Amino acid sequence: MDWLEATILGIIQGLTEFLPVSSTGHLYLGRHLFGLDEAGLFLDTMLHLGTLIAVMTVYFRELITVLKNPLGRLGRLLIAGTVPTAVIGILFEDFFEAISRTGVTIGWEFLATGLILWAADNWKKRGYKQLEDISYADALIIGTFQGAAILPAVSRSGLTIAAALFRRIDKATAAYFSFLLSIPAIGGAVVLQGKKLFESAGEAVPLSSLMIGTLMSGFFGYLAVKWMISVLKRGSLKGFAVYVWILGGVVLAAQFAGWF
Image 1: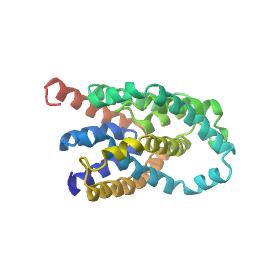
Image 2: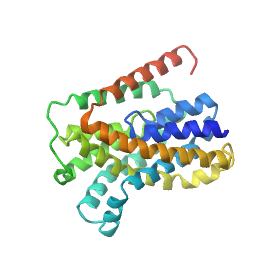
Image 3: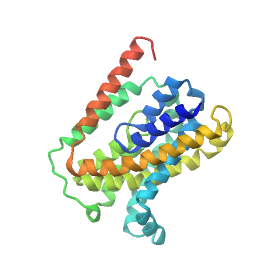
């Protein structure tokens, strides 16, 4: 992988991790386009590390608050949201990895993400809950949706934001809690994959390219978090739904034609 490919993949990861369009699905397509399928786990983990640093930078004050009082209300909500994600990930790890390796369902997963985003945006019960109104049941349900997003082309941010909207949480708070909840999810994935990551080091990814990709991922991830919060304050999820529908249709057509 050269520096240009690393830069492009880093930008893709940074933007799509926090936009509701599936970063893993986009990275799978990007790696396949560049012929970097063998670098999958190592590359994905390091690019996710870049976005982890980005979201931790945005929510630095909240993290300090949680670290000072981990059993405070915000800390307990994050724990409640993380538990179902961890349980789903551990129980179904082999199943999800098998699906991710083949990529055969990616097109359908993009389409499913779009359906969920459209349904959430059309949800008739207007969201009114602020952060102080979020219950532990809300956090558990949002965390369960996050666990389902382990499928490669199902958007983590899309499903968690949608779940929050279904629970009548307002859009801005939905994005806020979704991004906070991504910190233990992404961090946990990076830690659990650490052994495999180091075993893969040096096989397909030069260190210089890896560093460039990680930096790009972090920088554009930071911009994406900021932009997504502003979009949800005044905008709609339907544009993202249409985008993943188009992308899913293109992927299915390419698979049908034998190109992918």
